[in-house]
Length: 118
Image (cartoon, rainbow, N blue to C red; front, side, top):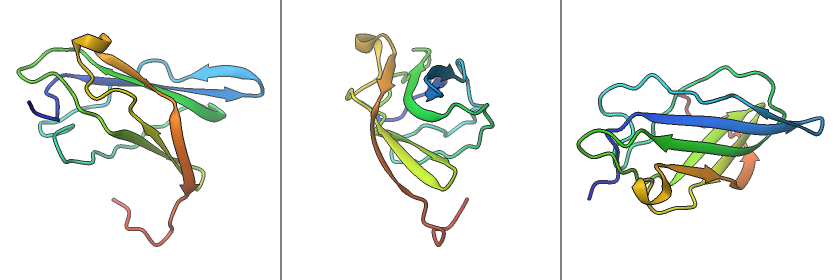
């Protein structure tokens, strides 16, 4: 079984601002061949409205392709000088979890300004 996925990936960031729940709605990043593969770290930049504190990332796959299952470890979000890592709560995103996962367990640390950017 492979750890990457050939399926289309989607995500939704959720937050809380001034006591109100906020969301980006479902977003499908522009994917190219080789994205979301085993051992890779894929980076992409998005512009979203002010969500306040990000509380959750929902992510999933469309379940299509020759190897649709996905072994996602974590999603990292960099915003306003902080790096927040959301751990994936399931071993595999696949039909058993309805092709989606809700990532809420986080660790947070300041962004290292000396780290190389890509």
